[in-house]
Amino acid sequence: MNASTGPGGLSEHTADLTVVDVEVGGRPGRTVHIEGGRIVSVETTAVGSSPRGTDVLDGGGGALLPGLHDHHIHLFSLAARDHSVLCGPPSVQDRSALALTLATAMGDLERDASPSTWLRGYGYDESVTGPLTADVLDDLLGEHRRRPVRIQHRSGHQWVVNRSGLEALGLARATPSAPGIEIGADDRPTGALYGADTVFRRDLAGDLPSLAATSDRLSRYGVTGVTDATASNGPEELAAIERAVDDGELHQSVLMLGGALPERTGGPVSTGAVKLMLEDRQLPALDTLVASIRTAGQRGAALHVVTRESLVLAATALSIAGGGPHRIEHASVAPPEVIDLLRPLRVTVVTQPGFIAEHGDRYRRDVDRADQEWLYRLRAWDRAGIPLAGSSDAPFGQPDPWSAMSAAVTRRTALGHQIGRGERLTPERALNLFLGHPTDPGGSVRTVAAGSPADLCLLALPWREARTELGRHLVRATIRAGRIVYLAVP
Image 1 (cartoon, rainbow, N blue to C red):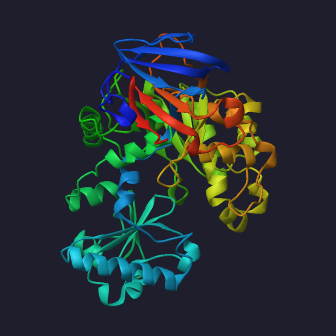
Image 2 (image 1 turned 90 degrees about the horizontal axis):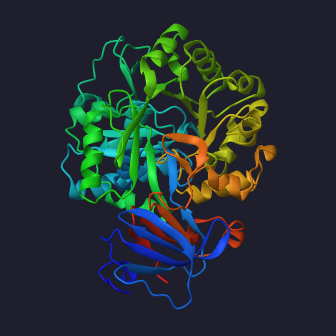
């Protein structure tokens, strides 16, 4: 061991590294040499060899994989969860539990924050106490109602603020035509806001949160790259991501989707498809959607689609607009006739297999039984020849790709029920959902080979053993551009 300034005696800052005794592509006893952040050779491990002038990591016979890539995540929202209060299942199941949660959080804020500091909640589900409004929130808050409160729906696409929150945002007297602001029968805002992330940041002078803890967490899962699919991504978010990478705060490479993003290619931060939201509360007209897809040009469009109706609209618009490759994000409900519409198109589906484990019991309760068989499908896309990639949609799902892989293999809910048995994948196929190239999700998988970037995930076991117990505990080390960014403590 030459350098000893990093984890486990390894330098965190070197891009020259030799990983010995690893399994590569199913072949044991391999040594991987890395220089300048790229793999320069993959060789048979020589007995008694001791490379000089470089750090050495003993793989202990574990499988060395390409680093995992989460093809749909929301970095800043995930980071913000560390400073927020869970207001829905599993810990908050009913009205009294929500009232207690809010009261406890308010007590903490009143000790440490000014009266104008917002309370931020997330994960609300209608099963707790029905539709949430400003008046319902104020009733729950009681004597604490003077503090502004905002709570995000579990879908991530709606916020509800209390009356003090509406006052703080200057929205207490919003007109019925105000975009993104729900107006009630009394011509007053109900407190429900859509597309409000930029509003909160602008009107509250809110800074984007640090990504350091989030990046470290992803590194523990073997994630070396992500696609940030936040629709509101723009120059401010791009600059913040670039600063986080330059400062060493963010270890992962990032492909950013969005609308008003300048072009970036190459390097650790790049920009990709234009994100288009197909929200069922107000679906766009077909000709409007076609025009938006065409305007995306060579960047392609990434269409947020979560219902049968929106998927039909997306397929129809894509068939008219042409171009591509495009992306369908989620494809939550995909009956056979709609899959047939997508077959001839240049489109990739980016879905979230982990939602079956995380939300499947709610789906069994709330989703029409006729649609449950079509939820978050996997094998159906393979059979149709439509490229498929995996993601977490964190923070709206858990940012652990291993739990998503496990769900793809078992299709079991938290309570052990199986949804869509015919959609199960092999462990190898489930892994490959997270091994695609960032700009070609669902295409050919990355490999550990000479000339490839040294973005790697080292497992504690050979693959033949790891495949039977998919879980984050398998990750022994994560290497990004030749640097060890995570090393498990023995």
